[in-house]
Amino acid sequence: MNDGRLGKLSRNTLFFYLLWLLLSQSYNAFHMVLGFVVSVGVALLNTQPGNPRIEKVRWLRMLAYFPWLVSRIIQSGIHLSYLILHPRLPIDPKLIRHQTSLKGEAGIVLFGNSITLTPGTITVEVNSNELLVHSMDDASADDVTSLRMEQKVAGVFKIRE
Image (cartoon, rainbow, N blue to C red; front, side, top):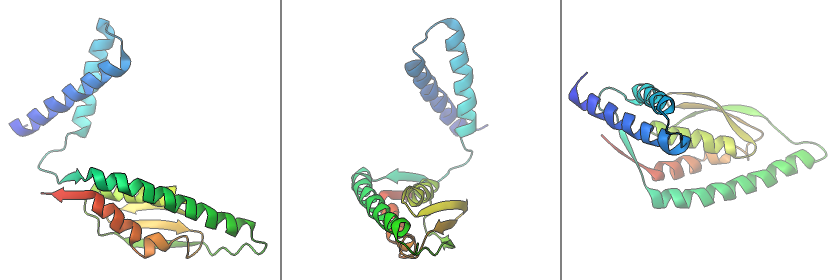
């Protein structure tokens, strides 16, 4: 194990241990030792070797993204209510394979979760840069197929090598 990874492992262990102490508020010997052991284990699972891409969050864009997402959730909820309450039930369910141009894992996770939060669509599967999305009709899938949501998510992250 090189010094860079050992340092990162130590920082992660310290972070998780301090978080454990803060959340557990139990300072007897058993809980402190247990917290340290768990912190080492979690740090080992979350410390990747090598130099992974670092995704920097643009917080102002993130703060602007959430109201936009909430508005899309409300609009999609109204549209889905219309579909359900319509006497002919005009749904046209389909699975869409969507290749994303998002590079980082955090962006893909935010994108997939945003799709699932929007009524009428759900992210069924994610394989590398391909998402399998189920939608109730074409209008429900519009944010995905028009790339509108993906572009909004891409603006939230800046990837550094």
